[in-house]
Image (cartoon, rainbow, N blue to C red; front, side):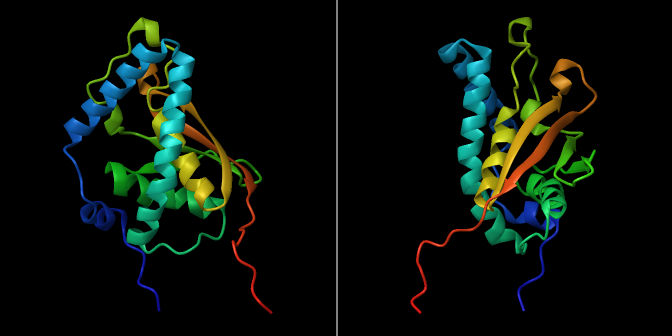
Length: 185
């Protein structure tokens, strides 16, 4: 019998962490450097998403190894695992899953608290910046590694005056699993 899945708090306690302020300030420095190097806010948004995607493709292995979560039965369960366990394990916060569409293929992940934005104020020149686009890339990359092609976009952002941080996650398609070797019959 496999071990029982861990709770979000147990996962958070079991993961090596860096100082939250150091993490927040380092991320801010990366965003600032990207703004300097790339100059175009839209290019920075793309780069943050790509960086997040690359991180997500690797984080999913650590998550699956430490959480003891078995295969989710559907996209709804997957979203709930991300909101309650994934965010808790890596950021120390949880998200709320809301606004499901009728098909059960699109939902919102709402964060009341976002540790990436401590100490952040966006200047007027950066109003199009999706400062937390790294997170949307992480989710997209992690889900792709478990055979789900998704589109992740920011709907609300407290840095732009909204009341919460909300990401819209849409399942584009379930990718069939491919095995690298054929069984010898």
